[in-house]
Length: 161
Image (cartoon, rainbow, N blue to C red; front, side):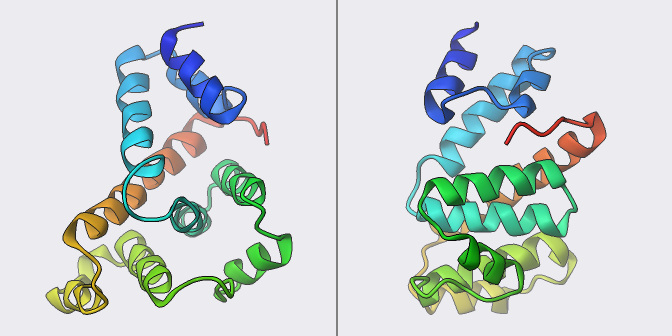
C-alpha cells in the first residue's frame, strides 16, 4: 500500500473505491488527495457544513456513489437520518447557523448556476462576515466534489459505503 493510500486509510478507516480507482494515475491520486486535505479536512468552514455541501452537490450532479459517501460521512458525525432527509428536501438541521445556510445555498448556486453568479452573491456573504478565504474554501469544496461526481459516474465506481 502506498503512503497516500495508507494516509487515506488512516483518515477514513478504509480506502474508498474512488481513491482505489485513482491508483492507476498516481499523480492524479496525489493531487486529488492533497485537495481533499486542503478543502475538506482543514480550513475555517466547519467540516459538517462542507459535508452537507458535498452531499447536495452530489445530489444535484446525480452521483449515487458520492451521495452514499457523504450520507455515511454525515452519519459518522452523529447527524440523524431524519436531518439528512430534511436536508435533501431543502430544510436545514436546527443547529445550522445563518452562515452555514448561506454557504450551503451559495455552494448550490456555484454548482448549478455558476454562469449567473454576480457580485451581489459575494456581497451577501461578506455582509454575514464570511471571509473571502471561506468563500474560496466553499468554492473549492464544490469544485472538488463536482469533479469527483463526474469521475465516479464516468468510471462506474462501485458502492462501498
